[in-house]
Length: 215
Ligand SMILES: C[S@@+](CC[C@H](N)C(=O)[O-])C[C@H]1O[C@@H](n2cnc3c(N)ncnc32)[C@H](O)[C@@H]1O
Image (cartoon, rainbow, N blue to C red):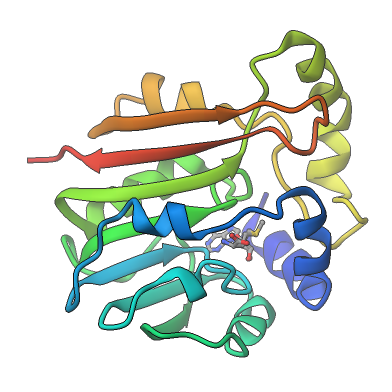
């Protein structure tokens, strides 16, 4: 999805985002963030923070930088009660203006299924995180069940072009994590790769823990 379309869609959907999202993905974010093993004083990138559904899971003493293209999504995030020190920035995850090795860790929730170029976005996350940094990902993805995949193929054009509900949330209904993490040859070590299968084509996903293996 192109940048202008992402901004329009998520600005439009910001106020309703959580009620829609939580219908399909009412999932505790604490285990995702805990998997980063964050220590006080560390800095973590929240890649496309949206309305800040990860925020309450960050521990006190940690500095979080949340980036997103949609100002309105970040306005919702500003309302969240938090323990960590959180800074928000409107910017494109595919072209981050942070120096190399700025972050100790990164988290990405339902992000890479939305960005236009997920390989490019993951390259940027790898560039701005330090060698050996942990990267926790929770995302929608293509089912490994061929029957469910057929439904995902059916909804994919509508999900990407019109969104669901129309114009409020858009994503790639055929997001291929095998392609992204195994075939892309990015500098990552896969520590955990758990797939979440469901007969509902809107509720298939994955939870991953990656290590930045750049030298
Ligand atoms: C489905 S929402 C996920 C929000 C949040 N991470 C969560 O877990 O609920 C996708 C978010 O990605 C943002 N986004 C999409 N493409 C982006 C990009 N290239 N750079 C930064 N943010 C982007 C959208 O604005 C939206 O807030």
